[in-house]
Image (cartoon, rainbow, N blue to C red; front, side):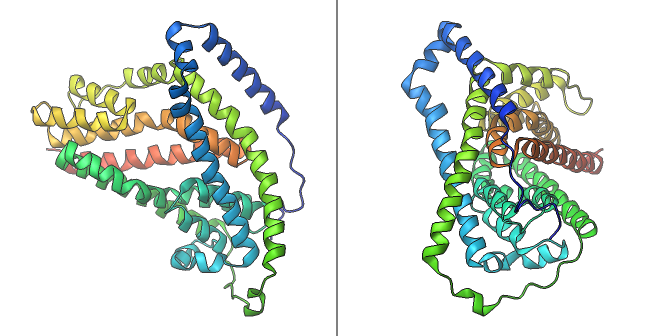
Length: 358
């Protein structure tokens, strides 16, 4: 294993980050409490706090806990190969290990748990930092299929054929990213030897395994939640102060197009960026009214997808990425993931525009 694996390296506490987060949190709380009546009253509302703060944090904590604990049990018990068996041909072609395959498989059930598993594998020395980055980015494919049933039954009734085309194009963009990442992995990582399971190692002292796993789990969970909670609080408070609304307006305000009527496109983009369902509802209404053609609707939805990417990353990925991974690595993963997503959607969209041009 290369020197990149931090199995025996002492982790430094990000005290500077804690200080910055504490200052931002204090500032946001002061603005909330002494700010406008609407904002301060919503912050003091128990229902609001439960829906926007307590419930999401509890859900995030449970998923992170599952991922951490499962990753440690899988690593200690030697079940990594069994869990990754389904995707082993893909992982082997990309010169990735069974640990990467186990995280990839878990991502079909929970993306947060899969990312938390990567932390365990990295700290136990079975994955290098580069392998963690590549696997985390590859987990975008199972994450797409994880949310596909929900998105399909929302988009299809609202946007019809245009919505179906949009789903196909975003799937192609996801497959394009996956193919590019696996190809890069194959040429940038050394070939891995075939991993044979030793039957003699299957007998474990489960009491010792669970005891050791529990101690590591508690320690890692505390460290992660020390980052997740303040980051999530800051993001939520900044969101309530209207920052993301302002950011959406700034991003969408400069968009012009000669392909889609600017009046109709703006409505679709603003709706899509503001809220998932309303965007497709607006697209369907404009399509039914004859304001947009199917082609124009698909292009507008793709543009909305591109515009929504940075806002979505800040609101939904920043808290748990910064907590699960080291802040620097978490920021890098967000930047790489969203950049690749935008590039792939633009490429697929450009091909669609050229193929459907009259």
